[in-house]
Length: 490
Ligand SMILES: *Cc1c(COP(=O)(O)O)cnc(C)c1O
View (cartoon, rainbow, N blue to C red):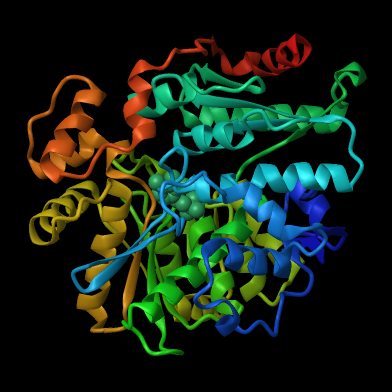
């Protein structure tokens, strides 16, 4: 299948699109012809991995032996056989996406991306090794390190803001095993880490790396089509589970409420809907950084606003990269329109979409936001009423789902996507419950376990005993030199 950039016309194979991540013109890869004629009935009742093989084949058809790739991606890595279990809570459903090796929603996609990347490398006859550089605000870094751990021909360096991730997240990264992985703290905030990494990509694109490095750079960022495709699968899985539970009739629409940051998760739902799954509304939930709520309400995207640090840090984002793909689809696949809008975003931090596009957006994607106090009240209430414990990201979505029902009286079954284990954010969850706060994060996890009766996930409890391997702290301006010396070290 051929892909082209949302900002251009040049086409590449799906294997090339996965290897490159971002298109050379700064756009995101999209299928030249969106797959059609898919019948969702053909995957209902299948196990997650069989569904994944079918969905991958629709979008990544240049890859050889997809069923084997899917097995390698998921077999034995998740703590439950169905990968993304659906849990009824009150009159809603929670789709738990955090059962992977690092207890992060990012695991669903980052278990598959390394497998796809090495397969693409082999098929394309790439002999240089791949160096993945990724800036992280906490969740992506660990999931990427674990996903790429000891994958032959690939190395990964993860950059996180010094003092800017949670103690559990930092420990997850600094204790990561694997010969080909490294985590580095960058002095500054997430934007410093991110712009430092972008500067390396720009410089290497202009000058190239010294040839003796025999290395090409790539990114594990959520703009890679190889990260987006795996996320489509769990929408089908959720629908299949609702059918199996007898909660819906075949063909009945289902709404999904998605805690949104970079817009990958909710965009995957839009892809599932375009493939023919009976998806009703995709409700876009934000925290106090509500740039998307405003955009989907008014048609004006404006990142010129204060940045709020919230209890749901993975949604603290003012530029949602994957939104570009939706603009492309709803704008009639018009690359010049996307180029124009993204040019304004880069220059002025703001753009307005044409009225017809706003109408199309509003038809499918209602939006709202919940601040920390509102999300914390939901954590406490849902635990009191249903004995179900949510993390702060999930709680933002739950709150928005509730308000949506109040505002619209829409009684369509509603699935809330749950993107993190509550044990990843124990301080916020204990605070929401009004419980005592012990001093260290491991004692906090134990306290949560005592309250909820849900055991601490093994991978998180085990961190306490693990040896810290990475302690480097570097200045943002020194990242390029750091990367070069890391390449020469191994
Ligand atoms: C990444 C992430 C999100 C946001 O997902 P996007 O695909 O970036 O919109 C939400 N919650 C958690 C916990 C995450 O890690």
